[in-house]
Image (cartoon, rainbow, N blue to C red; front, side):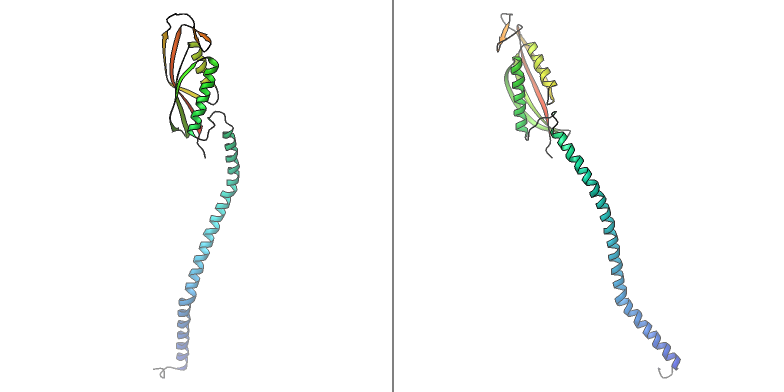
Length: 197
């Protein structure tokens, strides 16, 4: 069959076989390498775009970090909240406040009971159940001192029971004279501490 072909046909057939061999070599070697190379170039472009996004985020992160530090410093110096590292210490702090305020007004603290702590609106709620006894003026002074001082404290579940003394005269309670009515006062004293971050 090759003998029946002319010289020009043989050359054309040889060129066709050569072209076919080149195409096969290209398909088997160069095309996969080119596809892998294109995949790597796309991956590099994606990573480069991601790097630029992360660099922008990091540059804004440093300013956000300084704002966060400033906010932490301002919150740490904030005197509106109980400054304690645990609920037990905060409750003890509340007990100290009650003792200090009632001692200066002449009220008698009968008992304090620590109530379970809870979380409210991102803060830790610390509460005491307080029972005390004294006159009306002194009770008003204690309530005013607790609710207007710092840290911010709140009274809840207030119960006041009064009873007249037998002599209807002046009652002496811890050295202070009060009218003839003795008040038994029960209330929950609530303070808040910031969550530790």
